[in-house]
Length: 324
Ligand code: UDP
Image 1 (cartoon, rainbow, N blue to C red):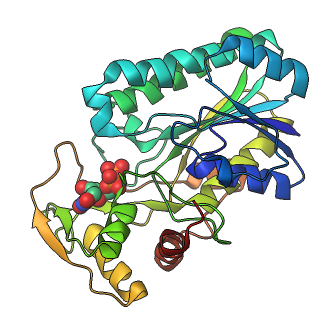
Image 2: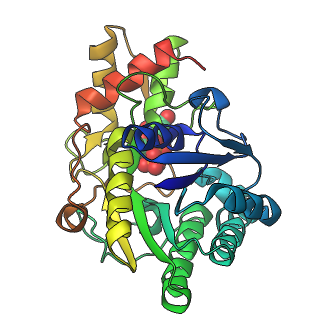
């Protein structure tokens, strides 16, 4: 199948392109290179540099490439930035996606896989969080993703656009062959931050050590990007045989605490990892883990690479041997 991967030069999109090719599909990439990198891509993949909301460009891609399905990875994803600049988040993550969906319909492309997030749930009311948990996002990032989910449900009903929403919990790790990984210059998530601090001999901050968890630090559900990409392939198979709209969590139902991550990095690197207790970060829940039972039951997906060792070791290998 020919698949337009929007944001295909980024952290998860670039691995998606590799695994699509491995599975015999043909990825085509649209990316504005704001955070992505062309070096993440095989040179034989058709690449269009541009904006996902540029309807003239989209029209020319759809005319030229006979796309059958679109995957979307091109979002702004920083919670703090979304609070400061909600306009940027609603423009990029909602308005531009709306233009992309309208272009798809104009060109009769009716299959879409959307990367969403645990942030649509807001503060967890029970654990593990399943897809029936109420959605009450507490920041513009989570709200922007939830808005697109609602649009997709309405577009399925009105226009027959078939889509699958995948709500990622904490995406982590790097490709197992070491070819792609997290490459943003300013590190925003815990594991890349700790690795960079180790490299630069800096001290990592632990946001809150008085949570109601075994070691007092926050617990999150880390899911390896190879597993996330595998879920997209399962979703693609599902959409090639079924119509409709559906939502799936992607997590492991197991959590890892901030302190466990710091200890694992130290164990795997053999280096001292300096850390210091810092105040709780506003808006953080103490524990957030997902139930992915639905993805197992309907898509036949389960995580295979999200054990703690594989996540930290792949991230470590990438960080210290990265190509770009
Ligand atoms: N965290 C931390 N120190 C850091 C960055 C993050 O203690 O320098 C904690 C953060 O409070 C949260 C967990 O690590 O409990 C994961 O944070 P991240 O920003 O990676 O992902 P989030 O769960 O917020 O999406």
